[in-house]
Image (cartoon, rainbow, N blue to C red; front, side, top):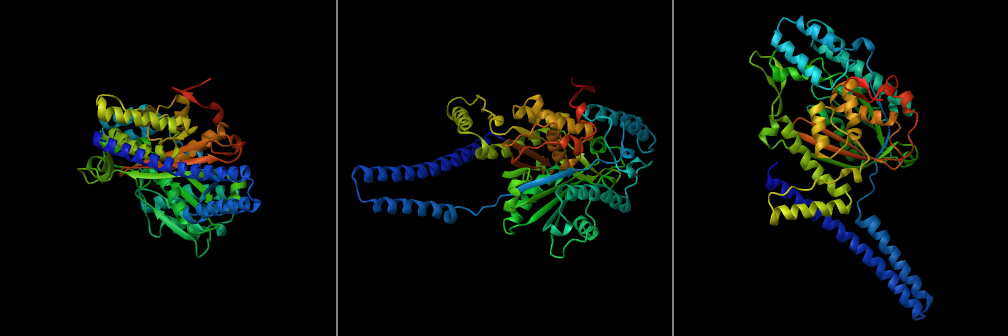
Length: 484
């Protein structure tokens, strides 16, 4: 992002903060006026009737402000979520992956060596998963195999969510399924509706082509839909189907995704029912969606296209990290106006003013988001991406740990990775009542979606029940060793 754009966003941030401060100043002035009037009545020994009239007027003003001038309540609660643990026969250790790659006729030694290098530097461990059709030599990418993978990924995780939350498919009012690269007819949401005999008036939606940010986007979408549908439940199913996404060529910029994407899925139940406040895990505080598709450099940084031999794959260009930084910067700058304390905003404003009017070579202050948020779910796209985002947000190793360990244990599972990270923190008993959790999804386009949740109750026992149950005691790991 150029300096002009950055300063424009900063000006917008300061204007928003000033507007918020002015609103609070008006509220405080009204309150002071009321107490001053009451004090005057007492000192002047005026008839008590006037006390009652002034108090009634103040009460009516407060009610008017709450119900007339304010927007209607739109609370969204996260009841629970489930993550897929694929069967063990889908595991793909590095040695197996490279051995299979060497047996593929279209890959030369240079391509295999490149894939081995990507694997060893990706941050993945030896227990990630690929669907059965990718284990076949050569891998199959047929429509039938993709549908089989849909059944294998979405049915178990959806059923686990139903079991956890004790609701039936007929109690679901909104269904949103996101998968970036596979969009069959009938749609993925129709497959779920058919399999579980859901109601004829269920509002079903299918999101495709939105990349790794899709599950965060789907939460925002559910939030907006439920604003006009009271007392409703919404389920989001998030996955990436790898069967049709396998690249059968040897162009290195397209081979990267074959190495880092792995099998995974998540199911999330959210609701706007008031009674859910007592039992739900989290309440949604903020959502924010930004994108840079208007910028050609960003638009083409991760692009699905054909190579010179006519094979389709996703090209990852060299400036991808720079584009990710620019996309993230605009998102967190705007989000900061909603969640950061005033002290951080003042330091930020001073640095902007200094750079704009006094010393153009000075650095803009990076606000400390850890003063507003206790836990971070970062994009698990790879070690370099996690490190770069962590550096930009001034995060420590413990803050980046959920993303790093999810990448190590399960690989990059596209949009569902955010929920494996939240599951990791719950399994470690780190999320306490009142804590804030920031889920940050970044995808092709490029786009950036933020969700900020507040924990509503103590969360215990997840180490025994969740997707991390069989391995949480072995984490975190460092360079392949258990971190004691």
